Length: 415
Image (cartoon, rainbow, N blue to C red; front, top):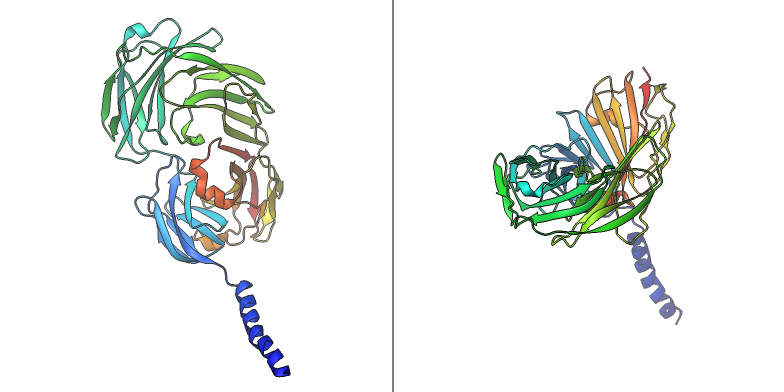
């Protein structure tokens, strides 16, 4: 009887121990990892070295890379030996990623656009926006202040040989203070194709611009705490918007802590209304896009940039164990720590969710020893993102992007 009672326990005990050893295994989960390296203009970047857990591959001509078996979490390192730059993405646990590189924001492919607008459209104080959008990432435009027989501008094709989209023309009038008081004409082209290196010609006649939009007022308040600052608004007709693709798009500058402006209504194509703010202080800067809406309070809160804590500016005899730290600033995002070696003209970036780091491991990245060198460093916070995984998975799909940036500090390493 005693043997019969203890036998199930003898059988059960190894099973429990086996289950426990599997459940609490020290081995990390593994998975394949695939991704694309992009510039901030969403242009794939080729021939960059990508390293994970000691494995290295080079990006293809469409910016792609792949690893078969990777233990999570992992650090991913992107190396550009030609430009002497390294970017380290810390502690990732995601299989499919899109990596944004801040140093790469140039477009190499352009198409010309030549648009004709009828002279009678241009009344006193009339401005005309001509815009091309592919409905995705491209939202290029020009503003015309007076009648020209031919309106020419270039469209960056984001490394594509051709892009399909449409042209939009919108006229508006301003008062003496620069505020828009009315939208008068609107027209769209049918679908067109722009080809790299070529110029596309298109004419809007009076009938094509006969739609007279209505107007609606948007009210906003903003907690400006910096000088100088620049606030403006623009209309984004693309479904995806990147803060770094919107530079230069200005309908009106906006002044003060409380302001309002008019947007068009009754257009056949949908758009987002964006208020963009750039603010500067002695200890940092910020730039941010805000989506704003009619019949809403639109209280816009400017992000506070990270503040550097240690080491002090011009600290000497820094080594690989010296702690660097900074505070978090405000807003949900991750940090890109930029470290520039002025002695060797080399740039290191650490993208992380942590507020501290050391220089340990920099000498293993292929650009020589760091002893007896002079450096500067800063911290840029990019968002919105709640984690590193979210940042590398959804950067190009986020609306209301921002980045805030600390001051620079210098340091030198020990002999």
